[in-house]
Length: 237
Image 1 (cartoon, rainbow, N blue to C red):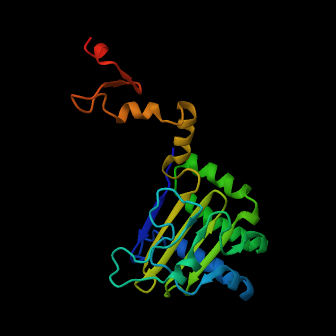
Image 2 (tube, helix red, strand yellow):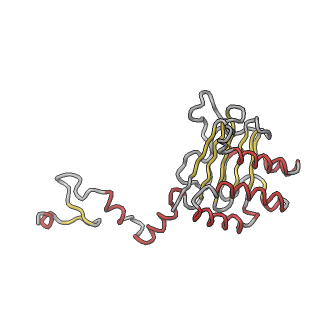
Image 3 (cartoon, rainbow, N blue to C red):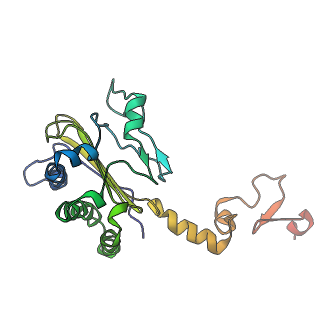
């Protein structure tokens, strides 16, 4: 079972009883403001917030991902190469402040924010992810922020571990257009399940190929069954 990438959005962020991402926003700002000035400087990776996810809509997060130059739906929005470089996500060495450099209370708050995302999934999966987050080495956890440091300023944050990534931005409409995505770096769209499948059925994907490829795409083509071409003489029988 896989539920990631799991994307959420809200505009306005708080609309009375409809407060889909309000708690996420409040927790994130609380985490940032609880840091000392020096720790905030290490957490803030850029003074410009992206209007979209740095990982965009890539079906699988690679070793390094850069923000797009433009944003869909926002006329005139552009980002510079410097912005893209400062905001890039490097899976093996993410930017931001390390969990090892946080106090116990601050680390609990960052973990709590990450858990707030993963607990939106089905209980069976949430329980697995919860154990994973709590067991992760603090040195592998990163909290990164970009943009303004107030609720009504364009801002972006992300939290990552070796296995999980959360991106959230609120860079449009004076802090009233939030969207976020939670990703499993090893199993987005069931990637891990597919790898297990290929391990069982061979790297050529023959089991899937039999369901996706015509046995005889044209009248002049030889008949193919189970990945092997059958001589025409047998096909006639």
